[in-house]
Image 1 (cartoon, protein in one colour):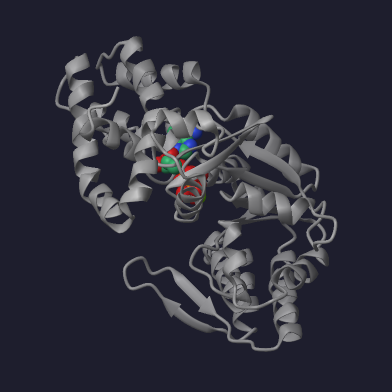
Image 2: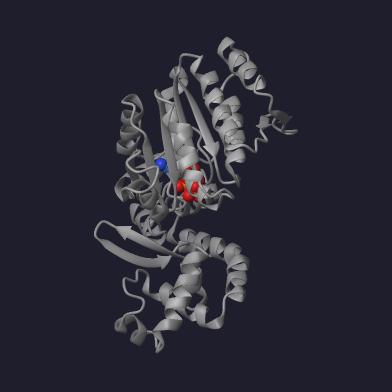
Length: 376
Ligand SMILES: Nc1ncnc2c1ncn2[C@@H]1O[C@H](COP(=O)(O)OP(=O)(O)OP(=O)(O)O)[C@@H](O)[C@H]1O
Ligand SMILES: [Mg+2]
């Protein structure tokens, strides 16, 4: 039997916990022609949600998923979109053939992945107008299929790093001439997405409806976990599961990781000692990376990281309370350390309703520091 606790990707509703409200909201946006901005922390389950929604939509629509993470410029964006379109269709069908021929007629360079056989196309268009035109033609190819079209741009924050100056206005020009297509913009940089879609002076102002992906309610996660353990005639206590969820700070990926390991133990009855062992094993495996982080930062920065580990959530890292409690005296040093850690994704700024606080982004790093420093 396969391990039902996936640590990457999506294999079907059976292995997907909850997200009923979110799924409804995405489907409703798609059916009613609203564009969507999906945001949430790293590894919370944004991409899995999109894949789940695509699964629900099935063949009724053409569901295109573009991962922008590897892209560096607008040319890449057009090329990756074209490649994603090819992957979203079945080339054996008449619609598929139409799309293939349509894309070929735009004369891209084509390659096939040696292992998977997946096609990749790439354009090399230096002129902005030509690129916009090609993108339009690409979409026209899709429209000829007469199907509903959904295009998700995942890891959308990547466009911030593009070489061009006017990326947003170029992209806006490309997208706004395309009615009857639902766009989903998804990413983990909440600040950037908010700026982009809420600032009146920017091209994407008011473009889409927001959907925040937050933690899965613990009681639903518990049910999901119990269901899979029972199915395999394995037992684990509700208390142990709740404790794990908390230990993982409600983070989807981390919970999946711990449950995956526990499930894979060759045992019918999971005991508290097994849970402890699995946690330790995971942290020890991560240790090498964490020691590297420690070597890469200055000792002053590491002290701040340790203080964050101890504290958990910190609302005012430059405030008297935090400084005094951890023996810091110079607030500008702390400020610089916090900024560096934010830039390097070691810390994360959480905006939770009215509250804003900082924490170590990787909860396993926090637990590792606590373990190695014997903190409680
Ligand atoms: N609802 C869910 N039920 C079970 N597992 C899930 C669920 N959502 C996500 N996962 C799992 O959690 C992990 C992280 O999910 P995913 O990659 O979708 O997160 P993400 O928010 O897109 O992350 P990133 O910011 O790195 O792109 C994956 O292993 C995925 O299989
Ligand atoms: Mg993702």
